[in-house]
Length: 258
Ligand SMILES: Cc1cc2nc3c(=O)[nH]c(=O)nc-3n(C[C@H](O)[C@H](O)[C@H](O)COP(=O)(O)OP(=O)(O)OC[C@H]3O[C@@H](n4cnc5c(N)ncnc54)[C@H](O)[C@@H]3O)c2cc1C
Image 1 (cartoon, rainbow, N blue to C red):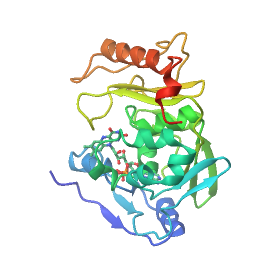
Image 2: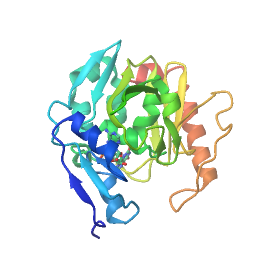
Image 3: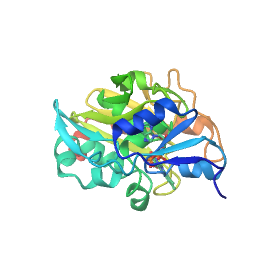
Image 4: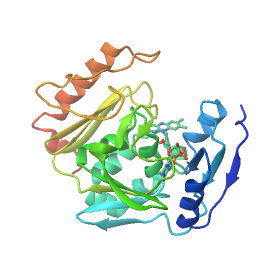
C-alpha cells in the first residue's frame, strides 16, 4: 500500500527541525522509518507533514557521559550493536538491541526512534526504564530532560510534546547482574513478553500498555497484558513469570554479559 499524502521537509540542522515542528500543524519526525513508514502505508497514521531528520549532520554520535552512554537521535540500532563503547559501558543495551527485529531493520532503525515510538513490546524502552535512564527533548522553547520513569504514558504514547525532537537518550552503565530475556514466536519478531534485569531493578515488557518496573515478590501485580492472535493475556503472564524466575536465579550473573 502507498502512504496517504503528506508534505515532506528535510531540515539541515536541529534548530531548523525544531522550528518546523514548532510551526507546522500535525507534523511527525521521520527517523529510521521502520515503524512510521509501515504505519503510513497501512493508513494507521496520517500526519500532514513529515520532518525527516536524516540529513542533519553530526546527530549520530555515541558518547560516554556521567557514568553512562548517550546516543543522539540518528544513532542506528546496528551502530549500538557494533559499538565498543556500548559493549564496555552498557553491554545490556547491546544485548537488547540484538533482539530487535533483524540486522537489515537495525541498519535504519534508531535507538531514539524506538523509544519515541513506545511500542509496549519493545526492548529498548524497557532497558531505559530498568537502568533508570533519561532522554533529552528539544524544542524552540529549549531543552528538557525526561526520566524514563516519566516518559512512557501508554501504548505508543510518551510525554514528548508534538513539537519536541528527542535529541539524546542516555543509559546509565549496566549494573550486575544484567540480563534481558524474552519469548517471541520467531527470531526477530516482537516479543510476546520479556524481562530486563539491571541489578535489583526489573522491568517487564509486552505485558502492559508501557514497560513497567516489577516487584520480584509479586511480579503480576497491576499487569494487564493484551490478548491478540499471537497470545492470550494469561499466556503472556505465564511467560513473563517464567522469564522473571530465570532472571532472578542466583546463577544468572555468571551467564550474562555485564
Ligand atoms: C519487521 C519489523 C520487526 C521489528 N521488530 C522489532 C522488535 O522486535 N523490537 C523493537 O523494539 N522494534 C522492532 N521493530 C521496530 C524498529 O525497532 C523501529 O526501528 C523502531 O521502533 C523505530 O525507530 P525508527 O528510527 O525507525 O523510527 P521511525 O519509524 O522513523 O519513527 C517512529 C516514531 O517515533 C517518532 N520519532 C522517531 N525519532 C524521533 C525523535 N528523535 N524525536 C521524536 N520523535 C521521534 C516518529 O515521529 C514516529 O512517531 C521492527 C520493525 C519492523 C519493520
